[in-house]
Image (tube, rainbow, N blue to C red; front, top):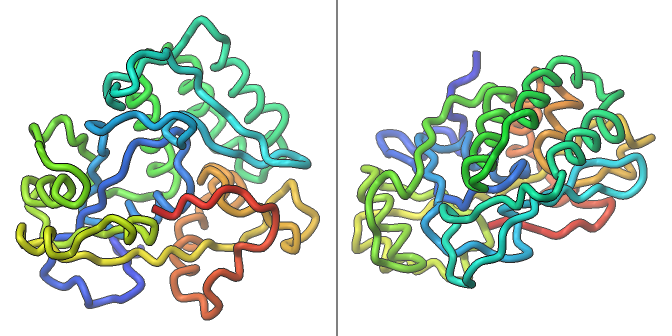
Length: 268
């Protein structure tokens, strides 16, 4: 059995506690699952502002042609509404629509659909009211499917953090007892190492490499669809999914898996 946490640079984190912090995402993509797998603990950042037209309530899955965007409708309140406060608009029949997209239109013929269909069906049989709870439930489902056992907590459960950006992340790391933050490349634009160092926290950059794998909806890997929700890998590779994800970290040609349909890049 592989180690619970496997980094691309074995030995670099000896004696250190690595933490990952990220907003909750509905059916998170592989970059986030990779970050969780590399960490000793994952903190769901539910205490920041909800991002409209972001990825907290939507993601792509693989259609037979173009990717299919699943969006959870949310109630519109103030612009300063926090993620943990965001309510789902259940006046719209989104659960039935999303389940049919997965079960009938996109993954019915996927190699490992039958292995996970009951758990997915149960997810959509549940009447969700809070967006963060739904997003965390999809994350837990994927973690179980991949075999990732990283402990997951919510920032709102740890306490109040008055900081913003780097200071906020540093405060959460300090409260969680972590000395290393695993950060995505997209956070280089605002991450301040000096602020992190004041809290005794080092930054480790994720440098995520997207794996290429056989997708049942594509005739060849030349038309591979990258940056989909991680459920796409799970339903196509089943018990080999974690190995496929980890193996990509040592690939010699960074970015080679990015060819194909140009979906939005969310490497943060």
